[in-house]
Length: 463
Image (cartoon, rainbow, N blue to C red):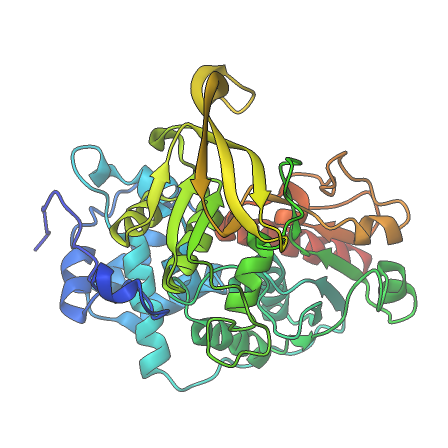
């Protein structure tokens, strides 16, 4: 019988007071009974608007229907046809602005909890299924993938399913890209990422770590010396941005990239870590995106009083609403319409305060959001001993500078054909943050999927 409730089934989670002191996963996941209840809210629309909102085009009504019938393994296989990382997507995708944003149930109430059901299905599969996927028969073609983040892993997985011999080259010592160095454990447990990657290895994907493309090997060497017939560049956007204000070179000023990498990849929050991190007592995080929320919530878990400084209002925050609400529940303070102008230090060269100026919203800028304008004479000092800059990132210029004929934007993004991911170099494709700048996991996955289809078409035409 259909469930006509106007609200989606709530997601159980850790108590805010408890979770702000640990790195365990915040959201606890649906029970079997709750998943069945929520799946029956789906109207099984014939025109399937939710699918059009998914960058990898998961057949959402089909997998939800399988859940409603209690066939969770069938639901998983439906998802896995289009997504190589369902347990990841179920946790970190901004479903509210994608698949759930298109859901008909959201017109007069809350949309179906598509992301929560995807997470349930993926977790059920991991717990109940021991059978490994079968490696397809090789088609004799070899493809190299640069970067093991969501775009690279998706491209590798889709090509491996078609019989391609795929090798992924990762600069760090662990595969996973932003999934392991950027997103905190309490949002995405690393065991889940590891299991997803093991599934790709079972399909035949080889992963070589500690290989920096542009230094250890170049794109030209991959194709000319190692015999790869095509290359996909999914190297992400790891070059942090700063404000160029006085005091940014003081000790205790971090880019969010470094701060999160130390914590998530190097486990700096653990006692005796080989890669320690400053445990600031009063921390300011500058920015309002998901990375800013991740940095702020990590700092809170290290015992700090945390203030988020953001130059627009709460309504303009680009971070997911759920992450903002979790941050507020955990005691993180937000200073809206506030922008740093300088950072002061003590005699030892450590941060002692951050000076900020009040802002007001003026006319819309190129992004369509109202431009912040400084209010003269409104400066204030905030007492802090650590500042984390979460202002976005751009692609590392290393690949561009070592690859002849690779066209890029002025800001560093690789130029590609939108429908194929094809670059200005024959046989070289790109996608994800290396093309767009910092964006979401699922958009990167969509780009990897698009490029995989184009690479398959390109190599089959050459055969």
